[in-house]
Length: 617
Image 1 (cartoon, rainbow, N blue to C red):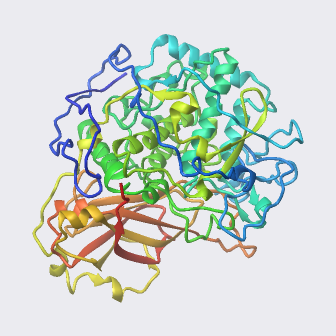
Image 2: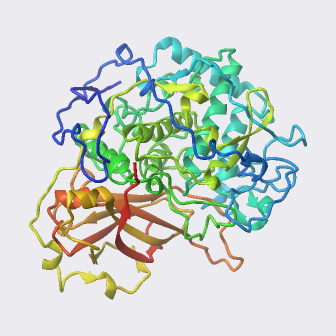
């Protein structure tokens, strides 16, 4: 199969300035990497064995410094499939969402997926009930030598054999066993497609959902933690660690070969993957349901620039990176707080859909939340998503901080551990992966200096568009996105100094995004991209970012056959972008929204630009 190699990459991620105010001094704006798309084996690369940041010691959270043990005060969001016999606590004040009662309050995850009769995995995602006892608080083991999660493209033959043995052992378990391949897949189905309500929090009319909010990263981290430990238990190897799909590095942008070699004889194989995207196809970080036909080199450049936008310019603060604050009483369908973080709405969603089989009615397996967990590649994809959280924290440890609200710290999930015990875990205990007993094999991150290429079009592009492009204050909202939309948006300040940028970053907000949650959708956002005759990609400076959603089956009919649209929001850091397009002195800019797929019913309720305080050191 074809593989990729890369050279002349940065070796340091230390910075003195926040990425969102100005490109750090170590970030080289020129792209001095070389890529080979020729067929070659990369499995013999022995040069990268240490973790990304082996000496990192995270500071204690504010909660750890308090005398009150809040786990005795607040209950959190139910994990695997939730807890049993929990006390109902009202949510008169902001609080984590309480776990559901898995005995009597687990419903089919969705009855309204598109072409439901074709949902080959089924939507009954309730777990086996082994005990009616309350789950016990999980205690992380101490003095454990960290397991090392390897980059999939560099995994040795011995490691692959061990990994296949573990997955086969999981597949051989009876479906009713909590460690079985089917039950592990059902975890995602239950929590992502409306299998539970917030009844234990006093809100039986509200569903649970771990996407589109700050629960996304911690839930999936714990999910992988126990999945990994279960696999190790099945082969009697406590050192076993999951691989990660290294899609942010050119050498790992293909679907890892270990998942396809030997076809159906391979326990890592899943027939419900898009055959067009098997190796040597290069993953498209901005995938929108159709292949672009771009060359290997061009696609890699687009991928790296997109990762730069997602990890640096658009992840300027905690809320932008993690997503909206979701607590008890919020509605995952209509809440104004629903907003995915930059990675979730970006590369995370793109990879899901790129792998899922486009010929299946619902894009199974990876292309739909209800079925994604049935593909072993799901866990390897999410291992790299988890690695992005780790890297984001490391590149600017002073300003990139995990949420410190008790509503986040005390959110909890319930899983069956490797010993089949029902255990409760908390967000506050998953912020340090070394404390959790694993690290990532080091892999270079070339996107850190892949700032999009500036294509200067002259000053006052917006002023020249007056009379052609409507001012945002004259637009009738909600604005439909069934076609490309351009609006003139006034900026809060012009010609800001470097000192100003250190204090506040300029952010473009799209609020009140309404969409059909049962469709895959994606639209792109550009600033001052007024030349419709030139194709603009994520590698160009006018590209602000994108917004994408996988199908959510949410039982969304209102009883009259009328669909209930989901609501969300999105934000894009544009301080650096305005520098690149030489628009810092312009009073307004042209915001261009380009629908790519599934946007026929999408509307936007508000478009505005605000200055957002930069987190203090």
